[in-house]
Structure formats: structure tokens, C-alpha cells
Image (cartoon, rainbow, N blue to C red; front, top):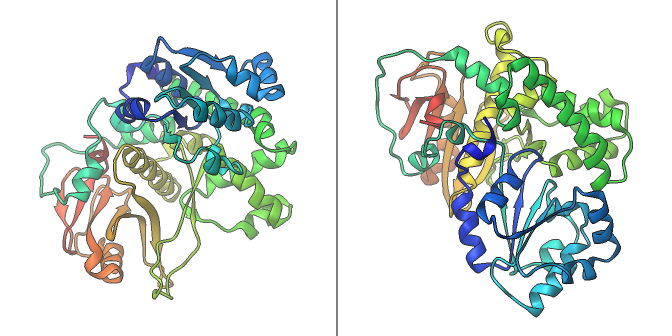
Length: 412
């Protein structure tokens, strides 16, 4: 089972971008399938990887000469290892503006590099590839998000019960293609080696940091706190480092697509809202391994698995959002009464809410309290919401335009 066997939802957008944009950049975490997708999309295109140390040295020593020596159409892999190439690529594009001339991939967010956005403005389109979503894994169309945005959920009573053991296995394996080929024990070993390799090499590529122990401890602490409000002071205290150091390390992990900060939703007049972001480990399998959760803990570690499930759902929605033409904004809602909505989706002025519940049953009158509060705050802009839960029926909640839906609705 390898990632090239799965249809990647971003593929069509990537193909389209190559027909009208000189520089197309595919960003995402290492081992998410960027190289496989790029090479399968354009098999006749010249391919150069900067993971080759000799090639990387040449690119860093003479970026202009390196770019000038390239064929007219080229795939340049792991471009974050030679950031000076981006200015040289700008010069080359300005001299000859050919659609699809450069296909770049990167395992670090190049948009956070100084001057990159300005230098390639109007010349580059950036797309994001995530670890495999469950829709991709199950080879089904990613329709959940469009169904929600278009208000097409309706009551459905299923005949069979939910596959909870199957769900816990999915959470613990996550979406990186390689661990999906392995037993759970071997998958967990892969996760540990993956984090170690990134800290030992990629962190040094993008930042002059050699404190591997603190960085390892930080990502482990974040795994235990996934889907929780970010408290940088608390993290700094546990790590025994300054707040500024902790913030810097968080930014590095975010830039390497290992963690995601989910901002707080707010309107200017809503003074009672909590403004802190939530922190999420991007891949649930990685989070499960680092926090030592296994499928056998599904019943005994209910709170921890509830947080893991929330991060999992956010990742599925993020994957589906990345292939839509209209840009969506994802946030979370929490107020000083401790009422919350796990994920808030905004498209233009429209507001939708997504709540996540591990339980197999739902109280259609009480469990919509967060969505009801969000609807009150958003007013006429509120368009609907869903409560994803471990059951198997689609049921109306006691909130207008809101439904309780099986978690599996994310991929079937």
C-alpha cells in the first residue's frame, strides 16, 4: 500500500495551475506524497532534488548559475534547502514567463520566509498537500464540506451500528502513507523515527537551533495537549526555557507542518470571547504515538481520545478545504462561559460550526448548545452546522439548520 495508489484530491488544481502559472509550489510535510504526486503529474519533466547534498551545495553556492543551467521545465524538490533559489527563479521567470516552468516542492512553509511573497507575487501559485485524508484513503469523493456549505444534510436512519474499533485504528495510524502499510506497532516506530529525523535535519535547515532535546520534549507536550488552548507560558515553564524560546520553537514546528494553530473566532463587538488559539498536532497518528495512546485505550482514555478525534476531524476538513476554489477560514469558538464550538468555518460572511463528540449517542436538545451560541453570535450570517459523533444516524439538532452526523460522513 503506497501513496501513489491513492487519488490525491489536490491533483486537478495542481494540473490547472501548471497550465497558466510560471511557478507552482506544492508545500506540505515530509513523507506526505509531494514527490510522488509531482513526478506522476509530469513524468517527462526534468527532476532535481535538493535532498542530494552535492546538488544542494551547488544551489546554495551559486543560485543564479544553478537556475540558468536548468532545463526549461523542471521539478525542483525540497526547495526550502536552498532558499536563495527563489530570487534566482524570479529573475528567470521575468526573462521568460512560460506557464508551468517551475514546479517546486517544499517541506517547510516558504511563505514565512522574508521577501518570498513579494519576490514571487503574481508569478507563483502555492498549493498544500496534506497527509492522506480518509476520503483519499477510502477512494471516495470528498463531499462532506460541500454538503455542509450547501446545506444538503438531511435525516437518515442507518440499519447497522458504527465501527468504533475501526475508528480508533484510523486515528492511531493517521494519514502519512508509509505507516499505513505497516502493523500498528511498526507504524508507531515509523512515527518516532520520523519526528527524530525532522528535528535532527530539517530544523537545522530552516533555523540555527541545535537543542534537539527541548524541541523533542516540546512536540511531545503538544501531543498531550492537542486540541487544547495554547498556553505558551505554561509550556515554557514545563520546558524550563524562556517564553520567547518556546514561541520560536512553536513557529518552527508550525513551519514544518507538524503543528497547526487554530485561531479564535471573534467579531469586534464580542468582548466575552476567548481570544487564545488552539494547538493541534497535524496528524492524529503522530499525536497518538507521541502521547502513547493505542486503540485499546479508546474506552479508558476517553478525554484524551476526544481531543485526538477533534484534531483528526480538523485535519479532514483542512484537506477538503484545500481543494475548493473559494478560500475558507477555519477558527474555533470559545467564550467565557466555557461554551465552545470546535471548528468554525467562514466563507465570505457566511459562518458554519462543526462540533466533535466521541460518544455513540447524541442528545439532540442539549448537545447543540455550542452551535446555538455560535448561531446567536453570528446572527444572520450563521448558515448551519454539524455535530460529528460516533453514532450512525443523521439527526436534526434543536438548532436551526444543524444536524448530528456520523464521523464517517467525512469520507462517505
